[in-house]
Amino acid sequence: MSEIYFVERNGKKYAYRSTSRYEPDKKYPVTVNEYIGRVDEATGNIIPKKDRSSDGELIDMKKMRMAKFGGSYALLGVAGNIGLRDDLIASFGPDGEKVLASAIAQVLAGGPMSSIEDTSEGSMFRELMGISERFTSPRMSEFTKRLGDAADNIETLFEKRILRTGDMLSYDVTSVSSYSDIEGWSEWGYNRDGEKLKQTNLGLVTDKKGIPAMFEIYPGSVSDVKTLERTAERILGYGADSCALILDRAFGSAVNLNYMLDNNISFVIPGKRGTKCVKKMMSDLIKVKNDPDIERIHDGVIYSVTETSVAAVPKGTTDTETDEDSNDTTELELITPDDERFAKIPEEKRMKAFVCFNEERSTEDNKKLRLTLKDIETKLMSMDPWTAVREQKRVAGGYSKYIECRIENEELIVERKRNSLSFAMNRSGMFVMFTSGVERWEDMMSCYDCRTYVEQAFDVLKNELDGDRWRTFDPVSARGRSLIKFVALILWCSVSAVLRAEKTQVPVMTMLRSLDNIMALGRGDVWRLSEITKKNKGWLKLLNISEPPSKLSLNERDHIPKTYLQ
Image (cartoon, rainbow, N blue to C red; front, top):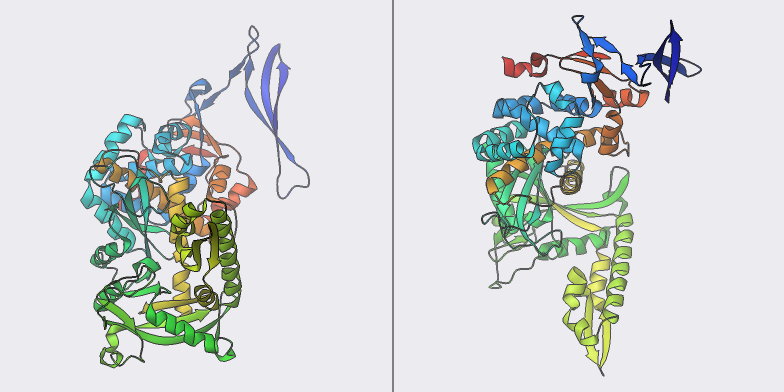
């Protein structure tokens, strides 16, 4: 806490600021006194002191600027540590610095891109990066359009980021709603947010820590299944042929699985419960799930696990119907070794299946199922009987297969389908994982843990970075805006990964706001920082960023990565 006091000397009055702060090696708080300026005798106002620059020149404090320093400094340091700043400059040249600056502003603003201008005026990243240009709305519109046209540069960035990911990549798709069709890019399709709006699909590839490596934009009517082949080809084209793809069950059609086996792509993906062979594998596990010899442990959780092999073969029936909850398609179906066709499938065209059961998960799944059914039944019973029968599927959604609605004697009867419900509850807590190239169960479970992180990345993009709406009618500008949000998401997820590794529950934004309590006062190349608290010193150390000096003397070349200068 600080307070201002005055001292009179030789008939003149001077103002000082007294600040009390805690020092770790001191028993009591330490008081620091700072001279502010002289008090004007006529008006009583404080005339700010004048400071000196590094070369001794007097600086008028009235012309100096106060800016938030810590958040900008930390994010710039993170970008350097993960090679993002180098990759941006190598991909976009001088524009790469502005992409990074815009992304830093987007993270600090925590809102729409229109808030970047205000953030840039109150934060320090422009001075730290040697950028004199302001981030006004007209200039940002021009800049995002220029980025959207730079398709080759974007591809170069994706290639560099993919090659930094290591041995594991996670891929998923989300939908972004729009009031405009963005020249045909926004279409009607399956809206994951449940909004009755046109949408564009956004595919995101992350590494095993959940840090984004590339994104793709698809028309809104394109299904998830159809995007996999194109994305896999791009990843392989970048040279990441030794990576395992970690995928959501939506991508697990027999056609996709067969494609990945044909192209020697390693993968981990959950099977769908409606698949004929998956049902059989679960039934077989029920008979032995209490056998202690099949128990395995992952992250302190006990599972019962059996293993088998699976292959995709031409469908043996004339049935042309498809089930959304099945891996089988109209052309191909999955089989296990007890099918006589299996022996004809070469080893390289087979995948491994891990059939898993967890007791705690079973209890939780059954509880959720019962509570959900009870809620659905209550809603249906509160409706007009004929409306309830007509709207059953809409109200119950995926749970409609467990409920039957009918009218008897003008009364609504809502009953549970006992056989379907019993089948589901007997198999609760069970799941089947298909994998190729990841042979050990423990490795497979570690791989699939990263699925959570790509879902969290989508949540951050939509909620923290205002990515739940397209705010432009131009597809080129939309792509440029997406690039800036993509880079902002890389920064956010990188900080989140550090916090997660330390098992701290502190949100990313809370950490950055704490760091932004480090203020800078100055102008041009000469700046002075406020005191850095013990907490903020800890945050900088956690991010592997050196503590800044109390006095900064900035010059342009200090802020360009050495790789670019060479």
